[in-house]
Length: 259
Image (cartoon, rainbow, N blue to C red):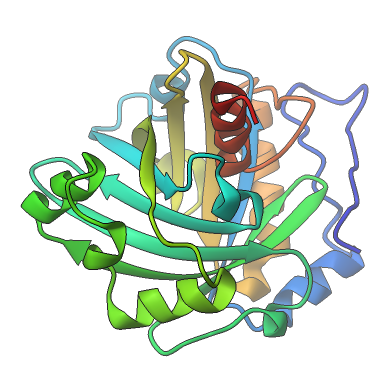
């Protein structure tokens, strides 16, 4: 049910391939039991895409730098376990332990305080459960630079989630960074309350762009239609292979590591 690639061949450039509102996928999404849904579309990189989406509306570009904490051969990420250290700017850091998989949300552990989300892309849907915590800047930098064991900045709940998903994995080093420029797309522009455009630059110089909109599970079908209309209006063309930016980043890291 999840692997339903529907390419919109011959449609307008913004036709992204989400199924129609009456498709059974949306009924499944509405009853999936997740906290929220994020509709995502990878776009062909182009100059000034974010500016075209926000024309004449004041909005701030937020800079983020993401580090994937993993073994040298990325054994965690390849198993769908992501330990991510994030520099949010202005000496603000956080760390996230996230598990990702396809199938029913009930198949994923859900410890207290965890957030469970469903990412829906044209052709794919992925559940993720995550625990995120703020980290002191000095400890975050020490972790990034290999002067402090990653487990020292995890909470007990995060450590338990990691051990349950990947027992026996000890020393983790920093891979990255992935540099992200994020712009919130104002609601008057797109009629969506939680939409944003991200431009991501990989360590090797490659660029990826993503448009996303977050919503409640029962609103996903309508939001998918709104996303499709907005992208079509701005001639924003999707890339042929739709996947999460984390998956694209992992491919880049695996190539760099020779795995």
